[in-house]
Image (cartoon, rainbow, N blue to C red; front, side, top):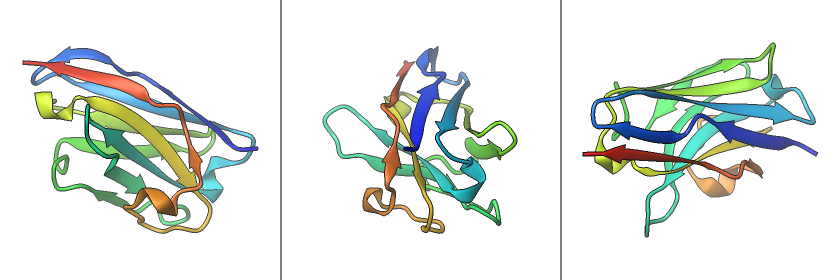
Length: 124
């Protein structure tokens, strides 16, 4: 059974940076397309970034492009989300997701495996 565990959330001021990590257990993460989603308070879960299996090609939501970077360390089964120049609107519960078949998917329904989430709060 594949399990995902996110770490790295916290409270940061506007303009600050955080690095989120997602550890995969139960299988080899290189087989999976990995993604980050977030759910702001009172809103639906939304796509943030994805990095494809095999190609490592990354895609980003417009709201985070040029500020966030997704990367993966397949040797250690970890996927990262580097978040720079954080804004109050980035405040959300951030989820890691994985899927064996999707390539560049931006919809929650395309991912089979999810972590429990890590809270990111950006103060103004």
